[in-house]
Image (cartoon, rainbow, N blue to C red):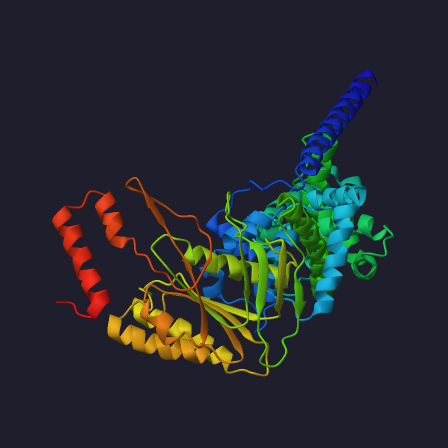
Length: 559
């Protein structure tokens, strides 16, 4: 009895110690998360991780989402990482989807705004939701949707053979009362068969248990969330309660299988593990849980959507707070026929640590000129990113932003397609062509497009001629185009269709400075030759180059 008591006390001590340790770890972690609300996230991502984060978006695609060219042009993976403070895979994946999926109407954005404000203002309820999301956690190497897709590969699994071998165990035990040696031999043979068969079967289902575990954590978290009462997120809570009720059967069936292999090493759990193996208990439960889950996949998707949406709202609030006072809720509206515009005050790029804000108010296309490194491309991206953020997360890095709803496209950071065999020029004209094709769809929303150095991949004469005609086509009533160019000829050829702005540089004491301020009119200065001189190029190169440039500008001759 003393020995048994010591064993029990040891088990209790280990369990209490582990419980207290886990609670202390959770408390410290959550306190750090709460305190970090509104800070710039410092999480690092692998390429593989980013590819898995996009799975919810790929499962819920539609024609008006941001295409890959525009997403990459605007460095939106980096913008996503700047905004993302989600704690669960559901939040990670939904935020990525949200940034690639502009809102379909103002009502959608207003509902989102209501939820974002709720989590920004209600600190205690936000903390409770963050705790649920932290406990939910991430799925690891793969997306939850990849795990769920793999369940379909298993097909329908039957448990009849497991019950048969369990029955043989019981018969062997009963046989021991008739003939102890014979019964014992039979029992050992059946148990050995069951043990070996268990490991063989378990290897087949083990990759799928992660999805079970995640759905279970999702249900346990939403069970607690569903008990809350809040008018601001009342619709979402109603969906959570409804889905939870439909998946209760899965929750019961999956407990044994998801708890296997998570033991802490105490004797009681070791005994339970062997019972599971020898009697196929978790395999039987796995088949029941698999059936329950496969018949409710739509409900699981709805649950992931609602939880991801709410956590996305928390992340948007944190993003706003991290920008201090330098952000705004955009004023968006459906475009009136032929009346396109974009107005912004103190607009900047959210990825810059020390940005220079710029304001603009345009009613037609914009043609940007300026010297190298003066800020043209960054400004294009700043406007494009804010237009996208305004229509996706209802937040702009500006003190004011007003525009219609647009379909957003770009052609900025293109490169040769070595695998496809396309030259830079071919890649470029295909990218611009897709914008022209979208512009012709006048029944849809107008197009807001951004083009950096139109047709830079070809010779000067054809570039200017073709660029002029393309840009005139993009100046139609259904497109608002922002374009940057080094070809000053375009500022004269397109002065009726586009407003001219420029960025300039200042050369002082043999050094060059860029104020990054948007200026009216076309550029009148050049810095390419000056940069050669500052880097120590020989004077006969820079002086003669300067002389040739001045002669061409005066009489159009390259003599």
